[in-house]
Length: 227
Ligand SMILES: C[S@@+](CC[C@H](N)C(=O)[O-])C[C@H]1O[C@@H](n2cnc3c(N)ncnc32)[C@H](O)[C@@H]1O
Image 1 (tube, rainbow, N blue to C red):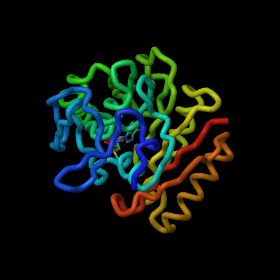
Image 2 (tube, helix red, strand yellow):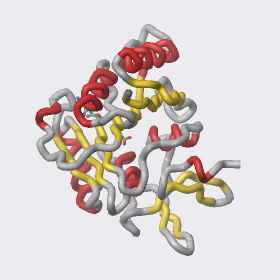
Image 3 (cartoon, rainbow, N blue to C red):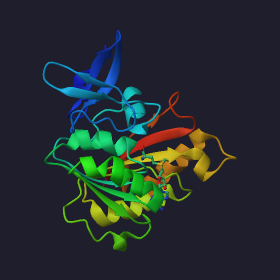
Image 4 (cartoon, rainbow, N blue to C red):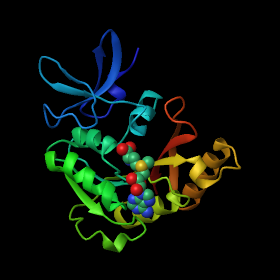
């Protein structure tokens, strides 16, 4: 039996055609972002959260607990792409929360702004390279947590430098590791171990590491706390 208490705010299990599906309460009722099914209950409209499209959904389904995103959280999201996962995080943080979303590709960011940001007043897009922290001039609130999903060889280093700049001690990093972006010759498991060691030697304690199989091949999501 799945336990609702382990889920972030505004996330629930919804029955669709006799099957339990992960879903978020739609912050913009009537609005579907990537063709996901919308389902109404007596009190809310939910958006089905597809674990094959969103690594955060995959890691929740695979058992990650105590994700630090809550109603009202302020999150720095690195690698927003066209906004699939950011749209669900926007549902989670709701009207009192805020997402600062960094994306390097202006073409991708334009789609994100047109299809997602323009409907959601709790997302601030930042078109920037996540290496260039000094260029994020629009961050005006304290950041509670960092989410990093940028599929680059130095993804862990980028996450660490953003956390050191924006997080305080005890705050959490959620880091997606795509092992093939780092080294195709090593096993994914050894890459996950290597990146966790790097985090530990850079001032983080590892809370959980979740392999995203079968939703994503050779990917894991690490949750860590900054010391
Ligand atoms: C795997 S996709 C992100 C998917 C998205 N997080 C989701 O779940 O919906 C990775 C994104 O990171 C962006 N990216 C890569 N390097 C980056 C960098 N140095 N700074 C900012 N964004 C970067 C890419 O352009 C791409 O859109």
